[in-house]
Length: 448
Image 1 (cartoon, rainbow, N blue to C red):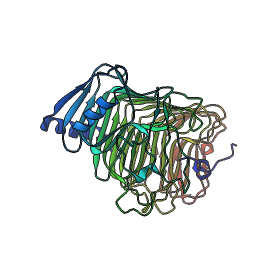
Image 2 (image 1 turned 90 degrees about the vertical axis):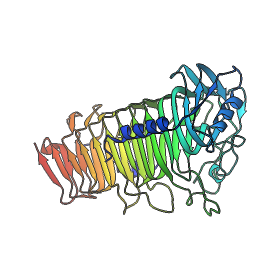
Image 3 (image 1 turned 45 degrees about the vertical axis):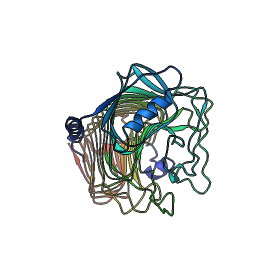
Image 4 (image 1 turned 180 degrees about the vertical axis):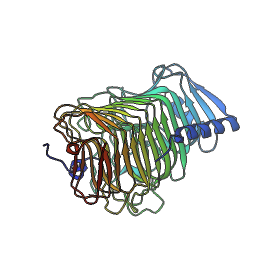
């Protein structure tokens, strides 16, 4: 039988919301648009450098000058990194791949040299490492492509929480960064995110690390520690009908408090993790109806309490439903939930109705570690190569429910479900006795 790998050891090197969340965000978005007349700003590409025109349009819609709509015509815009503070309005293109906003490739793009970058708020003169950075506000972005083509070069930025001597990172961290000290709203709809493989880049090998970064990256006045004092992000964040290709990771939601986020109906074709959820406190996250293809890593990777913060990340609600995930090489788990802390737990963790194709050498189809009476793993279909690992693995958890999952596509010699010695009072409904390994205490296994 295949040797089991601890979820803790396997993930230490990596960084029940109802389905009504996405419609509720859309309804609120439409209500704002209907009740507030907006001015319209048209921008067309000049064929050389559109930085000034785009930054001017963002400025006219920012700092409570809006709401307004920036309409980008068909064509290819070329720009240096852009920054909008308290943007209120919409940025609309003519359609995905009809309107393209790309980074300039005829020069080295200048980025803020704050060390780390979070110690100084971004400005157009000292921008963060993204094509578009939004600081607070109400943002709706739709019907365009954001691209960092081959040839995109920067003079580097210094990461957060890396210790006293952070490295200078040459790669753009994302096509979009959104951060705020006050609650903000961001909706991204029908947007294509495109990076490019870059053999000259020794950091991730791509021109983009992530597509979108929704993050608590700002610091209060008089901060003492540039990591512990980060202000957690609040607000609503929705990503729908988007595509993500040729980059290391898809969207990254990190360091939130009482945020509501949804990632739905999108396609991810990335190197490592399609959707990353990291250190979320009292937040609600809905990930549904997506197709994810990764080389390694996870389709959905949730890591709690992975960075030092002033308060633990706890009591969030996670729902992952109807996602189709395929990992082409060995990975830890196609869907991962891992909490580093021993005394925290999500409020709910619902992983249901997903289709997972495991690669040879993978450890788990679904791996869960660190829940208390909150995890429900049900009706998932897990298949894989002949020498793949365990279908579902659970550790450091109590009161979990593993119900009616379909493992018919796994090799017969491989256990479907493993409950480690650190589990207790879990309920499992499985097909037969030889498909479950129960090493825990007071777990209940029912066969049907």
